[in-house]
Length: 285
Ligand SMILES: [Zn+2]
Image (cartoon, rainbow, N blue to C red):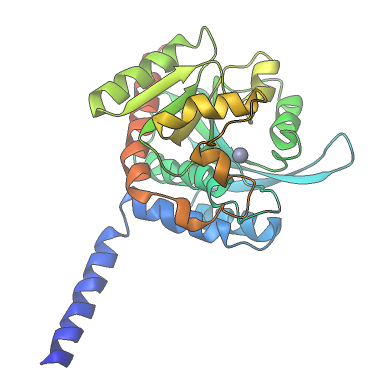
C-alpha cells in the first residue's frame, strides 16, 4: 500500500514536473541554475549557447579586447524578423565572490526565456537580436566593444541586470524614451505590477549605448523598498541596513537560494507585453 502510494506519488510528481517544464518561471530557473553552475566563463557561456541551441536560435561568438588588453567573448544571437533591430541583452560574466546567480545569471536567463517566447510568437515589426556581454564587471567592456563596432546600432537596446526577486519592475529610461516608457507603464498597469521608471540607476550595460546617443533602457526586478537604498549606496552613502540587492551581489551570498522564481514568473510576461506594445507602436517606418 505504502509502496503503491509512493509509486503513484512519483508518477504524479513526474507529471507535474513535465507539466511545469514549459512555464516561463521554471524555464528561467533552469537557465539560471545552468549558467550559475558554470565554474568559469567558458562554462557559463556554454550554458547560454546550449539553451540557444535547444531553442534553435542561431548565435555567433564575438571576441574583443578591452582597453587594458582584457580578452572577452560576447555572444550575439539572431531571432530574425523584419524591421529595425531590437537588441535585448544581459552580461554573462560575474565577479569572483559567489556564483553570480543574481548578478547576472538571473538577467541572462531572463533574456533567454523572453527569446523562447518571442521565437514562438515573433514581434510584428522588429528584427530581434540577443546579446550576452562579457566583462561588464570590469567596466562594461563587452557592450562598449559592440557599440564601438556597430555604429548602425539598434533602434532600442533593452538590458537586464539583477532580475531574481522583488515586487517591482525597476526601469532605467532616459528622458525622451517616451515610447518604451509608455509601453512599460501600460503593461505594468494592466498586469497590476508595481513599476518604478527613472533616469537614476546603477551603472550597467545600457551606459555605452547612451554615451553613443543610442536609445537604451535597463530592467531590474527588486523590492520597491530597496530602490532608494541601492541608489544611495551607489552614490557613496553608507547605510545602517543595506538593501538585499547590495547584501547579495558581489558577495559570497550571491547563490541560488536568494532567488524567488514566482516573482520572476510574474514579471517576465509583463516585460514581454511592454515590448509587444512598443513594437506595435513602431509599426510604420
Ligand atoms: Zn550585473
